Length: 359
Ligand SMILES: Cc1cc2nc3c(=O)[nH]c(=O)nc-3n(C[C@H](O)[C@H](O)[C@H](O)COP(=O)(O)OP(=O)(O)OC[C@H]3O[C@@H](n4cnc5c(N)ncnc54)[C@H](O)[C@@H]3O)c2cc1C
Image 1 (spheres, rainbow, N blue to C red):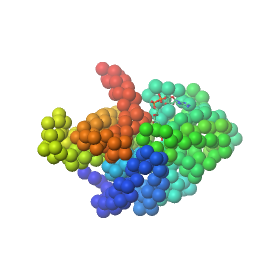
Image 2 (cartoon, rainbow, N blue to C red):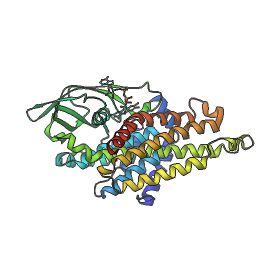
Image 3 (spheres, rainbow, N blue to C red):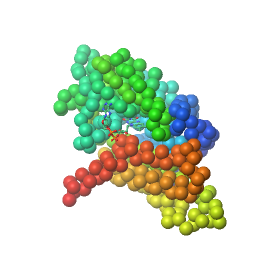
Image 4 (cartoon, rainbow, N blue to C red):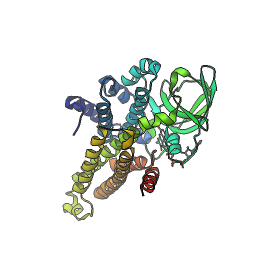
């Protein structure tokens, strides 16, 4: 199924397994940011997509996110943030960013995130755009607050959308070291505390023209929103497979009592395999007309992740109820997949509105 070169995939999987198994718990709970793992992936070429076809680049991204989620969804999410930021630059016509920033992002020297939750909700008719932009000489000045942006900090970059007026919104990359940008880290989430997630306050932050991805975010969004949603599916696919492994290991406990449970590992495995096939098939042709299919797969995977992680706890019993157990961490990870934008409620709204248009 994988379009990624098998040797290349094995290299990343070995690296991720070796690095993540021992740190997943402290990343999730204690806020340890797996920066060296992100940089190590960059050095191995895991973020390198320039020169690949659009389809191969998307499959590579999806697969990397899936592989890492088997061991640690926080890191998988950081990979999603970083590779999504890369997709912003790649899809733009900005030669300056392609020359100066893209190579550093691809080899992991510079790490980046995406502050698009609010704009994604804006485009779904859920809330107004929170960041405002004012045209000034040689660029824009941005003001406002975006409450959660992950994989950021000193030396990092991230993508945002800001509103100039009713008719115009701009899409730009932001350097975290910009003057007027203040950032406060969240360390009190119930999980994923090592994702370097910050509230970002913009106070007249100057953005030079060279950093602009598009003067029309409305036109740019259709170029990236399908892959934005589809690649998130990787987090759920990896997480569900890890939960199935836990269920299988607990199968023979107490004289095979888990055999009497309503949900068995093979049922979950069949469902995750079907979703995996659909996701990789779609990654081969991800265009904006595939957006609704990506939304459907994203929703089904988020729901399956909730079911699989809960069932894994039931299979394991008290051992899975310890706060630091893998099972409990995975339950928190599944809840994150369910609430991160586009959250389950957001996905359901998109599907409902699409169905109303068609009926
Ligand atoms: C661990 C973690 C990491 C995340 N990482 C990212 C990320 O990298 N990028 C990203 O874009 N989002 C990120 N989010 C946000 C996430 O995607 C959701 O948007 C968020 O959980 C809120 O969703 P909600 O629909 O429940 O909105 P609610 O929490 O109900 O909030 C409603 C809306 O109010 C607005 N709002 C809330 N507080 C403020 C405030 N202080 N100032 C201005 N507006 C405000 C926001 O626009 C928000 O969407 C992260 C969330 C978590 C828990």
